[in-house]
Image 1 (cartoon, rainbow, N blue to C red):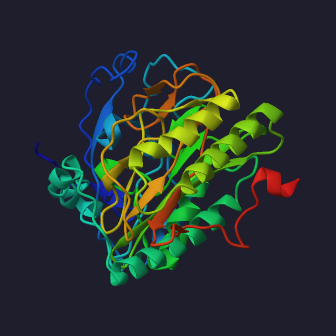
Image 2: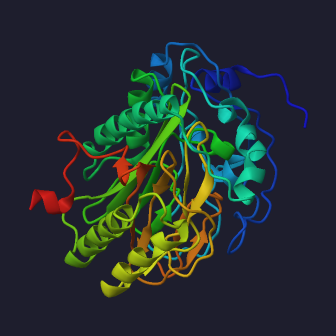
Image 3: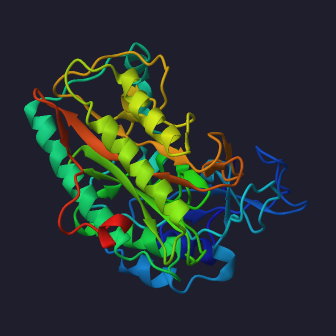
Length: 392
């Protein structure tokens, strides 16, 4: 594709962290449930990174962005539209406009995909993943993981303290982004396979991978913040679901069940445990509480790569290979649905929602298998935002 020389408007967008080369055309059909509105212009985007070290300009301009610079994300962040695409929405949520990419200073060490959007190192390691090979961390690598996870925990705690009615998920993204950079970390989701934001914010029927946007949180919402930080060569990954205002008893129960499912699986982590067996306590507890377990998304290995072996299914009777050994690091992150287990994906290519439009909740920790059991690398601290049952 040929790109035209940037005009003044395009240079303005570069300074807030993204280079836009606009080629207006009729949008192609979306992936699910119909395409964009007829004649809706699509915009192909090349993400720009490595900008000026001082990102105060990005913050200032974000507050003054013209309406035309907030666009609808399509095709996993590779296309953008000025109109909301047509889609058979399953619940009350709708896609909203997304602000431009935020700036990451040159001084922050970055993973390989930060500029290209393509995690080449993960793809190179994919053959080992397919063979079921799970790396065992050295003492140096384990300490690096501890540091990255401590940073990720601090970032999440800062962001969840801001959750309240009237706050947009875009504002939560700004808090995550700025806090990570202040701590010397790169927000791992940013530009990972072109994901346009620094955190995943999943509200109500969104199961995972929600893109922060201009929608304000409302009384009764559930919101999950999934934070990952890349710090000194390692990733730390965790997420939590919190209440906005007054939430129904049933939805509180859903949140508590998701948390307890995770903790029951964590209790099994020790050398010799098969990865496939983690889904048993999760499934049985979720079913006993009247809920279902998502099968489409799994936990994963983590370290110098964002995602690697092993795969951690959260449902029973799976066939994932492998047995835990001391020194392995991975996540457990069950997604628990109020209704059925099935998911659909929005036209943005990222946001997964429940097929029946009912609520979903999730929790996640990064874990280290030790000689005696398990160390929760992303453990909550006395500064963590209280969960709903800790407030009552």
